[in-house]
Image (cartoon, rainbow, N blue to C red; front, side, top):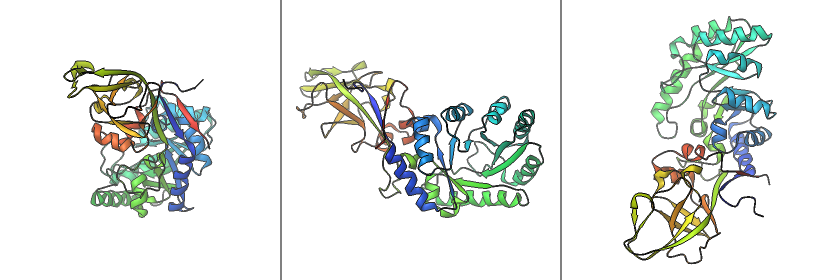
Length: 365
């Protein structure tokens, strides 16, 4: 019996190890690497991906929420875990109890961490975020020194890092350099405060701006083998592919429609195949009539509106494609960034949309 008869995602863990290993070679031994594993490791599966990452040289794991950090601790990850997004003061006790590093923008949250740490006889660990232009979270660069000194004076708290986030390090060099300059202003203002790590670079920042690597880099999309800006020269290996199967066949006469709302009309007698995947699996409805799938080595166009559980493709010119055949939705030249361009979004969203009902097939060798 085939354990994956319907729709599944294959996760190539050796490809992940290759990507992390290649990036580690570029940054050298003096720069630490944090794997960004937010949103179920970009849809790839949090615990197995992070286990592979740390075995492959990742020094840290970075997630968005306390719950993700707890899940990693429960999965046996002992490496440092950084919470990248703001947390609430009521989450301070969980952060300290599970030994999670927390990103803060003010003294107020650091005080909550301090109080929780004192009550448990532990040391809370925080990273001060500097807002260099993204205007999402972080303190003003000119305020960083004062805030850092106040945090350092709190009991039971260690100021571990100073960080920032790029707006668009792939294609806006002037903006990127201005952000680095602002970060340097903040770092200079913190002179005299003991800070272990300075981290500013994401995937493209790490590649294109070696000066931004500082003492740690945070690698997300590149670790998963996706290169939307086409800057890595083909050295990355895609980690995730998505597959389904053909479950039905129809002969549609010229002039008849296919799918909800009669969205697509056949201009000729057409043979359509129904694939058992849809937006309920995370395949975007926005790809209706725009994307392609691969069946037996040939790309076939999607026709009609993508349904929650099904989608239709035009197989008129591919008579070898039959009910039961496997279908590649992502992979075999159909990359996440290619689908993202067609859907008007980014590759990150294509990956993280994969729903829980899509089983992950772990490839270890």
